[in-house]
Length: 238
Image 1 (tube, one colour):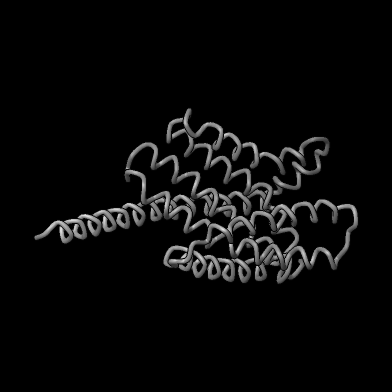
Image 2 (image 1 turned 30 degrees about the vertical axis):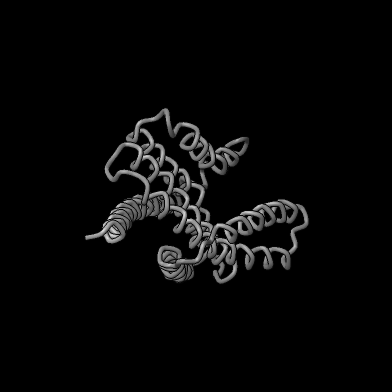
């Protein structure tokens, strides 16, 4: 075997190894994402059926703000503490984050019918699966698309804040459509980005577990936001 053939075999072995690492990492990420969604669904249902959500909201004061902002506090803690916290601590923070999201999403069961929620969840799951597979398998570099999507995300956040005061149904409809498009694209972008991260980390290591938790949080948020925007467009009010 000449030098060129040896080099090709070596490159092929590296590529196979990277693909294997990426697959294992992505499997871990999707598993943690599923755990987060299950925790959120269970807590949100309990918050609605037990009356916990309404009782907390009726306390007034800062409690509604605590319910709304608590998930962001856990996200900040996970990102800031990535290098300081152990993987078990990050797992605990992720579960608590998913639970606080569940409390805040209890309002969904109050606002929309159960049939509507189930239907939209199915649409969201199907869309997520298609875009995740696309992001994982495509050879196209989605980096530039990601930059545009993040700019669009900032735009709809600002527009949503403005519409809090305007209370425009038309603007809400437009924001919802754009939100669906943005988070549909972000699913593919984040999947490709996470795949590349997974190809460069050692499976089963402490750092791999930490990165998998943060990656699962990103995809979890893509799923939840897509679900909420689709619910605003397709959901039937209770």
